[in-house]
Length: 128
Image (cartoon, rainbow, N blue to C red; front, side, top):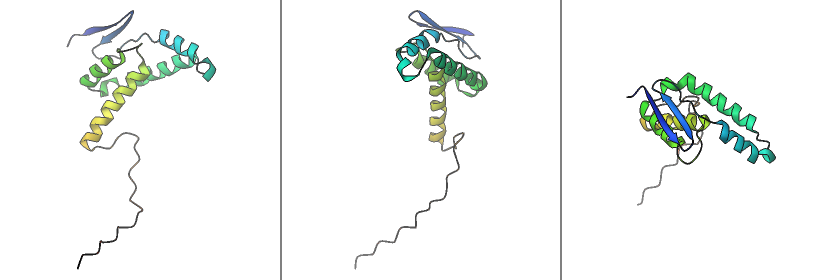
């Protein structure tokens, strides 16, 4: 794999270092989201705070995601709009969790299943 790769996004650019969280240009989309969301109490600042928090989570967990999932999710967030750390993190977590479910493993933060409280079903009568 190349040590550095770049995905072109119209006028945006996602720069990806092989072992680091990519640098996304989220400011334009947060400004647009803030302008559109003022009546709902959503500001550009709250959007930027969410993006910053998602990036910090990605920095902590980047190495735990597979290269295939990273590649897939980076291509997903670069399609149809401005890139987002929140969307990237969501994509990576869903991809990881889907694999765990398929393998029958317990998900992180998933409570242990409780024993069923339903009574055992009554046996069906046999025809005579």
